[in-house]
Image (cartoon, rainbow, N blue to C red):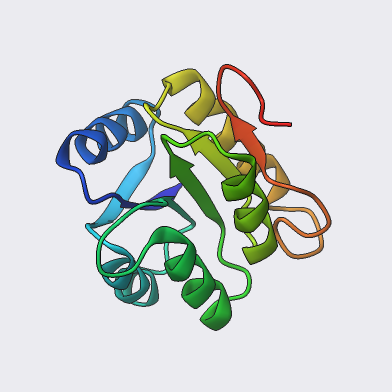
Length: 141
């Protein structure tokens, strides 16, 4: 899969890049804030975008709104160290497929990307009719 990863913090960005490459995926771009993510998405057209929620200039939820507004079939995974039901609900409302807990765990990342790969051939828009799954040690109810 071709992935765009977005995070304002260097350590999580590099950790995520390393994990994705170890899982055999191609990181086609990185962005440091939501505004950069919107521009990078339009230019790179990745298969999946993994984006932090809390960032400067434009947060992840606003970037998700902008990306999905221009590209309704964009597949976006939100990530946050804040394991909040509100974040998951807002992400779902805006069309995110999953919410990943930070710090990232490679097993959760693998499961989410495998599921997206399996779902990509199914009809209907990605994420329609279901809440995003929150991949963490404890699911958010």
